[in-house]
Image: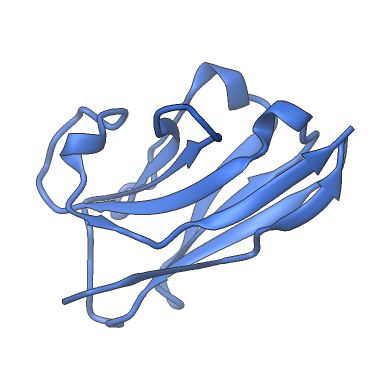
Length: 125
């Protein structure tokens, strides 16, 4: 069973930056889309950003557009989420997800087949 391994979370002050990374446990694993979701305490897990692995097209939730950037490194088989201008309301556990089927419902949790364990991001004011 493939596992998605996230890293890069931590604590930062408002206005700061963090970069999250996600890599599958098997180097030959290829998804159609890789994405990041976030889940704040007491809230549902919500879509943050997604990237098509082959074409590189990207998709963002409105609340992160212009602040967060999703990217991938084909050689390292790794997807990144660069988070800039962080706000206290960005505090959440961030999850990496992989979609195998060729769907265009990037924002739906049910479209994704594999999930990471999550990495905590805490932004203080």
